[in-house]
Length: 444
Image (cartoon, rainbow, N blue to C red):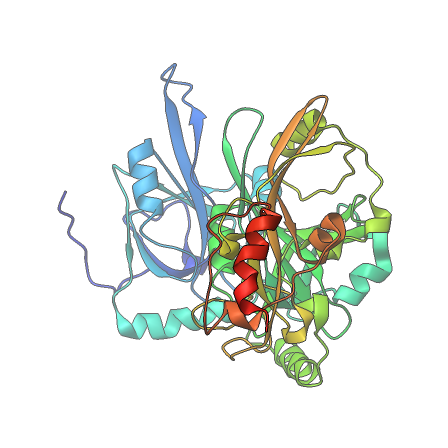
């Protein structure tokens, strides 16, 4: 379908929008965006309507929420064309008075009394191609939507503890590490995802920030660890009783500002550079995301059967720890030695796997990333654990845990790397008479 677009001029500022304006054109930078989702269509039984929302900003003080509605193909296609941080032009949106109750519960808080509605029939959205407009609009992406002084430090959150449980607050902190995106299936069969990053500032470190939305996850996966400062507006704070710590979660109301252009953010950036240069983050602090070492073994007391463990993993995407009384029913030792034993980095004791080709650490957060490192060899095994209720397959058994379990260590051999190599094709007890006959010629 061909579409004609008018010039970038004659745009209506967000501050001037009202329900009497028609055929308007609005330009702004996307500062927040939700995943597309479907709802039963009340007018057409058995069919679904799809929607997604985003928030645009065209000045330091003014921003507005936008909702797009349509069939699945239109909504998925439209949503895939732009992302958080893009400057877009919205042609002919419908200006409607916002429902304050729903907006406050499910959408970012905006100063506008309106919201924009986009439909396939009447509206269009495109990436802004005007360089002058982009130069004016894009810097707004680095301006927080809240007062730059209105935030909690990580130390403040920890000090307040459970009194903040359930509260919505603003956070100013830096990205310490980014975990892996984890996928799961909900009880209704829908797919879900989860990613956890660790935050730090001059008052605390390794503070969990959890993201569930694809759009938010896509945004944080682009961040540079230990260099990016975030102003997180309207994060939900909860007390994690299992990990016994406070955590922050991104919701549909949350707006994340990258490297905010504020005095407070610049001051924090200076502090974290000094902290890093002084070696303030080391050992387990550089480990990524949900690493098991963040959990003390002494604090794990929940005993589960294999059946209950599998049930919990289906119901909850959160990382959890437990105790199982069972048997090792499979120990894969038949693979090649390269699959049973791997090289691990000794850099800063991070113990991540060494890249075999480059001989560099595979941990992106390693302070010696990119440098050739010394390596220690260790077990990297897959085992099956079984009890009377079932089997957990392909559990990782690595490092010192594997050594303690097996009662032996890996001792590297120089001959296995270079020089003569020998392979044993058959091994059996020898006949003593045959040994004596063959050894006789060697006796002087």
